[in-house]
Image (cartoon, rainbow, N blue to C red):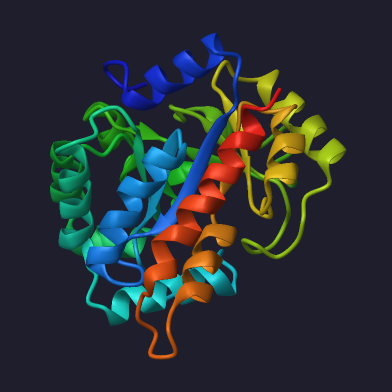
Length: 276
């Protein structure tokens, strides 16, 4: 476990008190360019995101669907790298010290940056947690345990195929929250079946005191609300990065609509979760 309470722990405690599920939003750092991405980060926090997952762009994001893959490509093409991503977090922290930020992505960019340097710099920048989808529990010594020791949450994914025998291994060094992947396959590929999701979440919650949030395939306020009735929060990613993509001009550059569309979608999702 981490050595002290993180912003993630504090946010979930506050949400539990308010009897409200968390809205967790995903955007890719540097998409469609650094300046717009930095502004979008501020916009979504103001529009009602409780926790922000910030994607670390990578050239081969194998677990992601076309929308998030395209966002990674746009960011890399615009020159995004780990140094700029961590600087984005620093800039955000200059005026928002409460909204938790989780860096999400793949191990390769972290490995290239250097594990020890990455953990130190991420913590100093104001990062609260990590989701690294291709580092299994068997490799916890590599990144997970040093991150926990530094005071970062390390968040694991559980899936519909994570059975009773595997679940304790997945949960062993997890902190912050558990991310339940509601469908098998890639992000944004299909809509989750609500009752199935609720049954799986119930099964996971029986094994851990951590909050369990649901992601993959949640695109609308209505879906978010239905899913959240059986979970501690919902993650929306593909719908947001799709809103960015659809707002771009024919030259691939942001337009006056880009930030507006993202803010409107996040506001709609937040309203749906606070309606009960």
